[in-house]
Image (tube, rainbow, N blue to C red; front, side):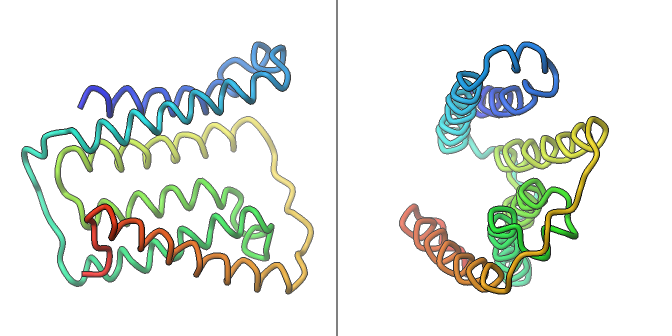
Length: 181
């Protein structure tokens, strides 16, 4: 569990660095981007190792066919939100933080079907980080809506969502976590 918590802290710290110490981050220039990327990646590695090695202990709830179906739909929407962010589709003109909304949606989907302590720490921790990140960003900078995207980008975002969702489901199955039942 220690590695899981350290990974969460490293992930959050890497992402909050720019907002907590803007002068120091700006002074680092492009090298700062590399450092943040390495720290975030190290955080992910620690979270994965920590989650996979954590003892389950107490389980408050488990998988149920209804929650699995809801979680699957939420995951599809989360993947779409990531595509929306990259493609700057119409939805990106409505939702200020599509990637962070995707993380929140992803976390809620996983919490619906994983009620054990390591899952509460991992997915609850990332949900809390995403909420805090949105609050910090909203307080520190104004938002201007992106320009309208052509319909081609909307279609690409939908196709990319379906492909990526299929790959994620396949990888989950390979790892022993069948997502559809």
